[in-house]
Image 1 (tube, rainbow, N blue to C red):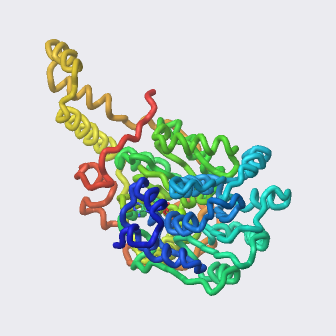
Image 2: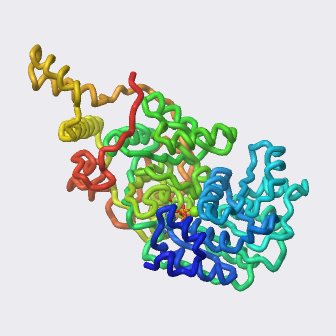
Image 3: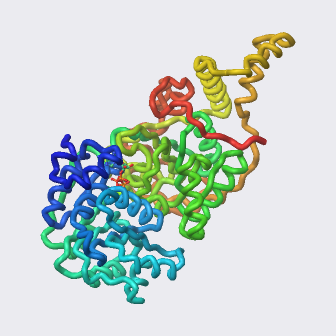
Length: 503
Ligand SMILES: Nc1ncnc2c1ncn2[C@@H]1O[C@H](COP(=O)(O)OP(=O)(O)OP(=O)(O)O)[C@@H](O)[C@H]1O
Ligand SMILES: [Mg+2]
């Protein structure tokens, strides 16, 4: 590991980096900062949550001439939330140098942005659509841009932004430096990207697997109609600190968020059809822990860096392995631990193999807790919480009240009542979630018939390539469903703070 102080970074920027709490560079930072400062074009690929923003951010900030009021750096990001997040990180990196940064994105009043653009920002971070808009209105001049950065390049090209991006790029002088970063970089996308660049250096951080090691990865095989109950039980048992649940479609996200609310969880959905104001407020509440569960579509969560996300649930298995990588990468960031659970319907088992083949990592079968086991798990968690609280021993006048009650009631009864209050028995509030069609069947030993409508379960003939038709490896008591109950203290299983509404 190299220290930032060994990377020839200016004292001013180093000061900002230190203030952010960074001492040692991550591998992608070590691999690209020097090259970037030499002016090279770079394609940077490294696992999720490994600091790619700072990897392109430092060379960018270093290059800005603060005496020049023109836009010198342009960063393109696929979503508004990501544009904001990246601009905030750049702001921190350029704080001591006093670099002026502005983010522009759709859904925000354009007149406000036009006014802000007059304050001579030196770096613009924006989404493709809104950037184009400003270029066409001539409210954004890119003649002096000497660094162009595409964050999550593959996603933007996938989303069909290729023409927009080409137009934006042709508005930037050709003798610029171009940096392109993502955790995934499919070959086809990389070939397109290389066309925009001048003999780019490819910096790919080699790792055995595509996903980071500190994410424990599980799958749950379940028919469509049982998924939601299993999800609720898993949440109760695993007690995430913050969780993100991914659904396949916007409708799915809305329904899931609503169903979770009905069951008493503090959950909110986020997707492209919501107003910008709503998206921002949801994200803000989630970051502050006022919302415990964020339900999202793939796109809405790309690149988001939210500390405290301990669990990711793929309520629907994603269609592309790349999406899987980005989804689960919302946890296990910056060296922290995380848990990812992916639901797979029998017909979709082929997709599981495809994902595993791409990530080069097997997911462990998880036998979901039964309703009774889930309650038992919660009782244990409640016990742990009581125990912890007792050991902390700062109970103040609660002790006076306790003493008063002990005079009237039996001690065991009292503790049992306390535990019961803390445990939520399943209320079986009916929720309605439309059935999602399974993904069309694809290789890997799954269902071989037509990928048509399915009411779940029936007709499943395939088995996993590992040969075990029924997931069984968790029977030993090590599956996450069970593992969590004991609260063995294994990092990710720690009792969290996922609250439920009362009543
Ligand atoms: N050198 C460092 N030391 C410690 N923490 C760091 C360092 N560099 C970045 N981080 C932190 O790591 C987290 C993840 O960084 P970042 O969002 O840049 O990841 P990423 O590689 O872009 O991930 P993704 O592929 O999901 O977009 C951030 O919270 C960031 O502040
Ligand atoms: Mg990123």
